[in-house]
Length: 107
Image (tube, rainbow, N blue to C red):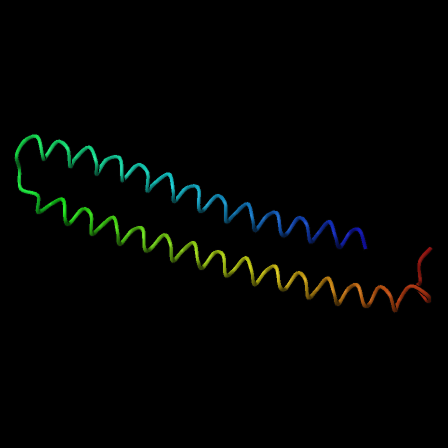
């Protein structure tokens, strides 16, 4: 039974770690892009260039943010499904363990 708990904990921690890494990498990329976009916008404003490119940059960034949010939502949904499966397996294994305690074949 403790082996199953350890396996469950290992699976959950692996999934959580993967989700956290995806989110962290995405946030780092977004922060770098926002920083670059802000610097580019200030340079263009100082130089007196047209702001048409800025609106396209903002639209591009908004699209990227929406895409990352969709990925994050999908990762959260996948994590929730994995957690539900783990719970179902744990419940099923717990029920089997209770039935099988009296007549086990061990040594």
